Amino acid sequence: MAFPGRLSAFPRQNKRIASLCPCGVPPVLDPSGSMTMAPAWLSVSRALSLDRAPTSCFRPEQPARPVVPAVLRRPGTVVVVSVAAARRRRPVVAAAAAATTAPAASGEERGKPSFVEEMRAVAMRLHSRDQSMHGEKEVPLEPPVATWDPTVEGFLRFLVDNKLVFETLEAIVGRAAVPWYAEFRNTGLERSEALEKDLEWFRQQGHTITEPSAAGIAYASFLEELSEKEPPAFTTHFYNFYFGHSAGGVIIGKKIAEKINLHKELEFYQWEGNLSQLQQNVRDKLNQVACGWSREERDRCLDEMEKSFICSVDLRRHMFT
Image 1 (cartoon, helix red, strand yellow):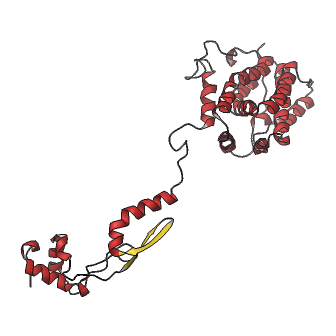
Image 2: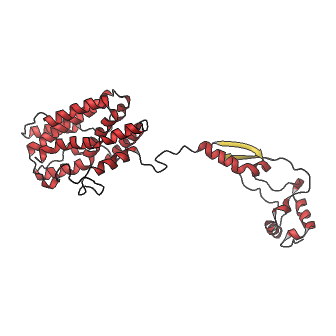
Image 3: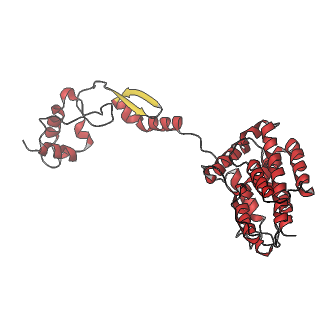
């Protein structure tokens, strides 16, 4: 028998269709969530007609239907319910599963900048407009490198002072008087050993290696004191000294080498491994540490940025004064 295109107009045919389903139970979802295969006796023409039929055509006239269990699987939860309940409750179960497994959105996931990004933004504003598009300083803290007239002796004093400061930073995180300082041991950014090799090379070339200058000694002493009294402020100097050297410091070093006719690539400007990855590892650790700080502690760290810039510039004065 061929069914008309619209079954809702033929109630007797509707009953006939319902009687085709075994036990009066309409097709149900299997445990995987897909529809069971149509019976072999259902012809193509009947299937097409059934597909166009309204939902009411599939409701049996029996007062009750068997309860067939179904399993709803979602990440993080397994719920066993009846087919009817599954149809009614599926949105609720899915929502509950999502709430159970979804991690809480962090500040960065919600679009907030990380603390290191806050630090970098403050650092960029401390440049002049000629040095950075985000610079806000009318007058730069130091003259452009192109105007410098360095000497080998001045460059050596710069290297000696840097070696003292890097040794001090490494010693502070090595002792870890503040427990989380230990997070910054062996980052791969350490420079004291590289500077020792470079100074030894200059010594072998016949140059005299002097003692640290007053500026280098003063900065190292300041860092020792600050690391004990104000850890967040110390972190600013740690960040600026390491990242300032591995970014702008490399550019300055190349230009100085050209000016003094130094035909050697110094260890000071080379790192083992991928520098970008080493930097990112330290950024991640800084962000983790800052998560435990109050807003006041974070602001104290940011407020120290200009002081750290000035201290770094003082060590470079050997090359432009």
